[in-house]
Amino acid sequence: MWRALLLVALLGQAGLAPGLELTPEEAAGRRIYLEGVGSANGEISARVGAADTLVPARVMPCANCHGADGRGRPEGGVRPPDITWSRLTRPYGQSRANGRSHGPYDEGALARAVGEGRDPAGNRLDPAMPRFVMSLRDMASLTAYLKRLEDDRDPGVAETELRLGTLLPTRGPLADLGRTVEAVLRGAFERVNAAGGIHGRQLTLVVRDPGTDRRSTGQALQRLVEEDGVFALVAPLVPARDGALAARVAEAGVPLVGPLLPAAGETASPLVFNTLPGLREQLFALAGYASSDLGLERPEALVAYPRDADQRPLAEALALHLMDQGWAQVRLLGYDGGADTLNHAAKGAEGLFFLGQSEDFARLADQLRADLSPYLFAVSAQVAGAALRLPPRFSGRTFLAYPFMPGDWTAEGQAALLAIRRSQGLGNQHAALQVGAYCAAILLEEGLKRAGREASRKKLVSALEGLHGFQTGLTPALNFGPGQRTGLAGAHIVTVDLAGGGFRPLGRFIKVDRRR
Image (cartoon, rainbow, N blue to C red; front, side):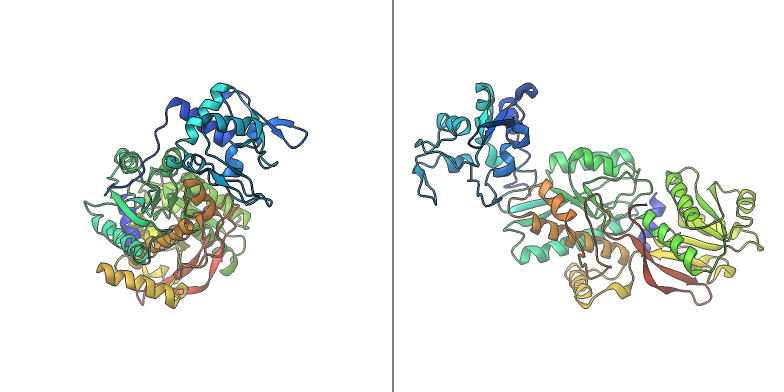
């Protein structure tokens, strides 16, 4: 896995509000407020309208109208009031726009408002306000939670600071890559902070080293979540991708924007937003190009993948995709170094689709007999280091997928990245990682802006999900949506000129069907 990541390279806690610790009573009140469910899953009812129609409170919990933060949000011409405890208990009371006024609330007055729909002065509340039927125990729990509601923020959110985290190598052979990504992230956040931050909050970046194996990666993620209390993760560069990062993130409940190395076969998560296409999207784009642009008539293909890795599911998906596109036969080869096995499997194949590492790509090409010269297809992030070392007969017959090309860059996007490079003392090394980190940073920035001042992880996910046609200035437009967590589905295709020692773009960006 270290080698695979190396190939990609070719291209203060003060004031923090940690996760709120609630007493059992307050936790029960939180569930009533958010879900309308009483203690021990007990039923709470709500009386609605002049006829006092009874409906389950879970259909219309308090948070539906007053919001998870208690500050209320207008809906259908109704503006639910702010019910945070500091607001309810103001000593001088409140005066409403409709002329109704009353003194401050206390526990008894709150119970009367919830159960009878009357304020401390005995005035009837807005008819849109349900009257809830619940036990004294549940009412006490709800009151206890309302007293803590203002403090119940997601971790990492303070009055003047928003803490974000990432996993980057800080030691060992990948330290230079980690430093490059960190510099881009810090440069992007410094630009935001210099402009006043986001909704008055400065962005703080916390970096943890993921180490080299699954255990160390899991421990680093746990420290970010539990010790550092980060709000979200951005652009992690994890060497030991084991296909479980998304599951770990989902378990922690932390949104992740822009993984820089999407793993083959990784389980999708509604909390993970990929800025750039993963291996699947890029391989499918290669399949699309091979099927439509090479003039092959019902060809045969070989899909080669490392036998001891977790990429067989992706290889199988690619094989099915090729057959759907009219390839007459597609064979799978879990390669392990045997030339005879490779040549037997490749016999008759007009296309060889490769998954794996750069050294293996070069070795397989060398092992193919001289009378076997199939078209070679691979993802640049995996094999770009070996592409110029292939046997000469593969010149013009080798095709690589790239998520973006210099032609995608706008003047504004290029200027923004150049400014970050200058401020952080960066050159153009590891350009693909720089672009990936920059795109992740500005995508997260946009999501945080749309999530609003009362930011929550749920609001951030909803904001990111609603982004369509988002322009990074360095890639084609990103599009997300319900169940759609990869902003860019497809790839640019380039061919390898071995004689000239370079790469030649072949034109358009090839999109793939996200549903397949």
